[in-house]
Amino acid sequence: MVNNQIEVKLDEVLKKLAEIDEQREEVIKTCREVVRLARQLIVAVHRQVKDEEALEKLRAAAEKLKNTRKKMPSIYYTGCAPSSLVEYVEAECFYAYVFEDRLPAMEDLGVDPSIYLLGVADFTGEIKRHLYELIKEERFDDAEKALKTMEKIYDKLRTAAVPNALAQGLRRKVDVMRTVLETARRDLLLLRRLGNLEKAFEAAP
Image 1 (cartoon, rainbow, N blue to C red):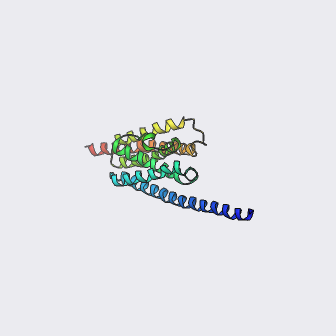
Image 2 (cartoon, rainbow, N blue to C red; image 1 turned 60 degrees about the vertical axis):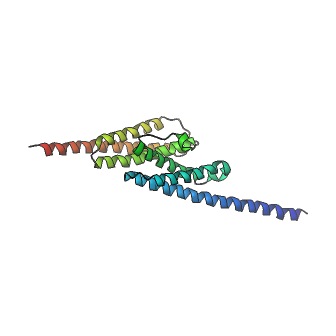
Image 3 (cartoon, one colour; image 1 turned 45 degrees about the vertical axis):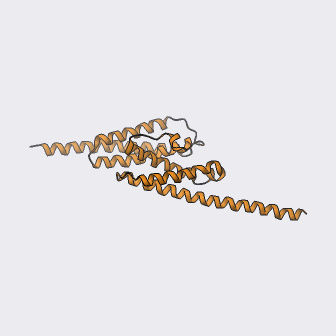
């Protein structure tokens, strides 16, 4: 009797695990799609291309991933979903910043607070790259604006009392942000002065 029960019950458990593994593989596939589309969108924004098709595909993939939070929480919280959604937030923020001059709210993106903060922290790295592109185009006022955006994000996150357990890796990202900010500030000041100096030489008789 007991031996028969063992076989039946273990078969049920193994079948359930097989179903969970299948769901996990599907989530991993969606994670990869979110990351791929997020990077594609960021590259397009740096090229000043408003790739709305990539944005819509990214949002659809991210929504599919977010739905696993309620349906399969054990897979969502222990797998690649949170880190993939961080990249989604980063891409959404960069797109909105460059083309719409705004920062999307956490509620608009439908993500957890920790994912939002980590994504915004990563977003500053894209602002830095954007800042250097503006400098190359001699758009120094726009570059100054980009620098101020980085400073505001850094100042807010630097003073935020967020335990590492709630937003793992945020402190490290903020430390990196400080170095990035200092470098960008120094380079902008130097290159702006050089640009003004070149103009002065060109204007000289």
